[in-house]
Figure (cartoon, rainbow, N blue to C red):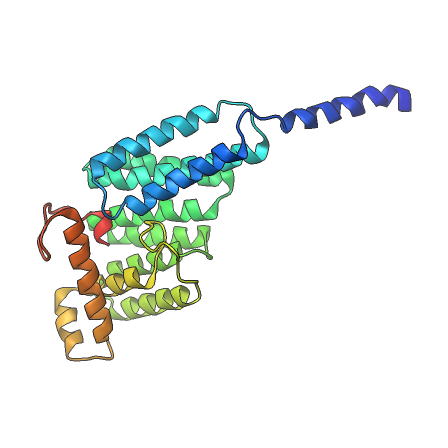
Length: 269
């Protein structure tokens, strides 16, 4: 029995050895992750065409690496990297008016998140879908995307942004209670998270971004009423939102309270 089964045992050992063979090293993987991180941190202020070119180059490079021999762990890591690049690409494409391409990139990110078992990537893909629905006044689709995002991830700051989107949709539909409940839930989630080292990172929500989200959830008429009801919206939030909005416009090269385009940009959120 041992003699007959011995060859099979060693075949398994050889197969396991081959799964550990790789033509890409940890330094290369770390460099890829750093490059993606830099692009996500540049998103609030970098030119959209520049970001589009860099993101496409990154996708071409990473997908090429996926054809190489690597370990199962490395393959998943590269899949995750590809997912983040597709998420960023979807945002940039939508900013550039490439709606169909943006939807394809978002769908690719969602599929990769499912394949890699990466809840945060799936949740951000649904967050982007919620943003698309917001800009197209599809309120119910927006709420559906928010709920799908919450199902995908309950840990990271993407949940905070999903609550902000829910508040925006509720405000447009005139549901004041849902606005308040969503904002309260988003603030509670944010308060449980550590303050980020790089708040400019597009896929990280920090207190300053949340201040803008709270203001943006209220239509102009609600904001006028909030000024006379301090409990509804505190002054620090008003000042923080104004500062963030002015900064966003300054980064785009246009004066505060004006738009270069009628189409909202992701970086305005």
